[in-house]
Length: 313
Image (cartoon, rainbow, N blue to C red; front, side, top):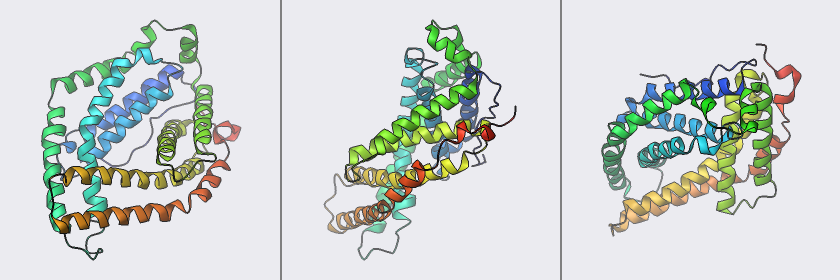
């Protein structure tokens, strides 16, 4: 069985941006392939989860490095990555709903309907794995995606593309400076989104969650070349945890609409409502600590600019 441990790509300070980019893509694709077979079954829900994490990291890398490799050079790749991720989405949502929702609260709500809802969720999950996950993994389209993507980063095909001088300059530049500029830019996006945010505006919080995730991946990518990133990542994770529960509530609500679309069973509907209420209360409890987490994050500073933070080659 593959290991759950996920260390960053072994970047070093003397690399060019192009070489570092290729290494990040290769590292995450190889990790995805380790979990590919496990993802075929819900007996170990880490399979789909780890494949999706790898895909998100790859997609984030493509977005974050866009000043060096423009969107025009990754259009087809981004489309295929989105398709693969989409085929895993429902299965993963049901895994989380069952494991972190129904199982976590079993016996704690004074309502009937838990067993019936569990059976219904497992039935839909089985169908999602069979009709979406496995079908995608066995498809010619997925096989072509893997072959084309591996060839793309192995040959650094973007270096042979018709790029503007500004893109080629970034690709040939030292990775350390590019990483610093990238982290600065993405942190500013997060700060602009989060400063004076309306914590009760779902769309604002959702956008902040997405930008925080990009910054977290960027910090993870470059941790091997900077010594003092752990505190920064820890404070960012504190914000992500709160925003993640908010997202879970939204997904749970949408899933229940699908699961119960044809049901008029009173006990089942009552239990589902109680389940959403329980998870919503958890979110608002955590939300009380948002300001403190945000202040700690904004006060952390920029470890990637400290001279003492740069690892030796």
